[in-house]
Length: 51
Length: 436
View 1 (tube, rainbow over the protein chains, first blue to last red):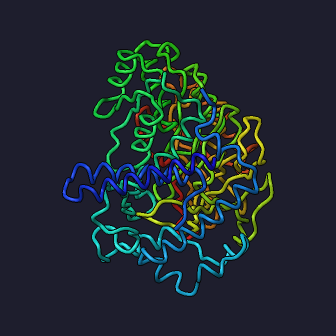
View 2 (cartoon, each protein chain N blue to C red):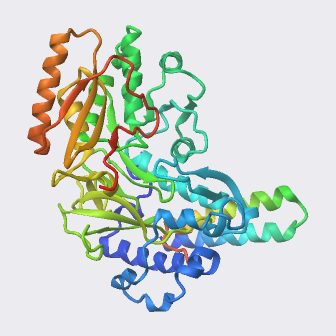
View 3 (tube, rainbow over the protein chains, first blue to last red):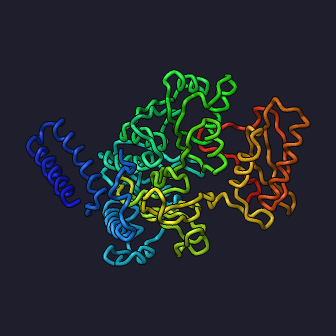
């Protein structure tokens, strides 16, 4: 599970980076945000979620 | 294909699930206090740091449906008011409760919260054996009500092919099932029975429709009704429980004995009816109190559902380690004292569905004559039966009712088509006593 959690963290970092690389591009920002929604679900389902 | 939707969470040891849920409870409590006006006010005296043990959760007050309504009346932002947990710009979907018990509650779903809800429903469908090979027919126009939207999105997500069956009459739906060879369905138990009846009136044996698997939603599913649907369609019929406020939070596995709570998505407490302070034991009835642990657009903490269920054993032969509830007894509101005896309308449904296939529709009416409460069962029987046969059914029903409930009743045979028919949320119990 630790391996999986590390990968989830990497996806999160990549999605955040995507958003910061193209803040004016609606499509990239929205799709990266949607990735972050599923990152949240992955965190929730792997007992990683922290508020 | 793995039999679990999430093989990690569904097989975690009990103590690990408890630990995660306790952590998540504190997370959502903190979130609600910071983001929802309702909870900013309601939890003024509660600090998250004070919740140090599972027992401390009981310090947090219950949330009632009436409060949700109150926090939406003339409170900004329209139409969600103080229950909203995210900036209104993040709300992507409007839903509402059915309004059966009063003014509907308007439910804001952000994209994230909606997907969280769908993920919970994926557990319910997967545990009931729905798989990508299923073409699932949803025989409803979903409108603003949540259940079939959840079913639709979750079925898509687990890989089923979904056929939305709105804007058709029942006959049209039977024809669509045949045309597309749909092999699965989800619907209110009442409407699944209506579809089978319609098919028979069209000269079609419901078994020939090819439905392998069905899921009940929107109404209680007594065991007799579940078995009747299985018998009519030759399918496996599963139950689940949820509500608009809480999401779908428990479902039936292939063992078909009780409902597994979707953990760690929900903290479900089952509390004694008298004091609402003690977790009931296995086999005992308890009021269901729920906290959805990850939904932020509409955080609800310790929501008192008013539903009563029997607590089940933790371990199931299916291997899931989640808590179970064995039988939904009914709503606290529907369990009434009649002539000093506790009466649940579900007992009557169970009796009719298991022993009286000739009764096509029914309604329970309670009235008060002077100081005496009176129960009348209004029934419609199969129109092909003679008057004598109908009278014999009425007599047997009155006797069966007395045995099952310890209460006498009158049975009134109504002409065909007199009683209301329901697709969603049947209301077959009318207590007209006032101030009972």
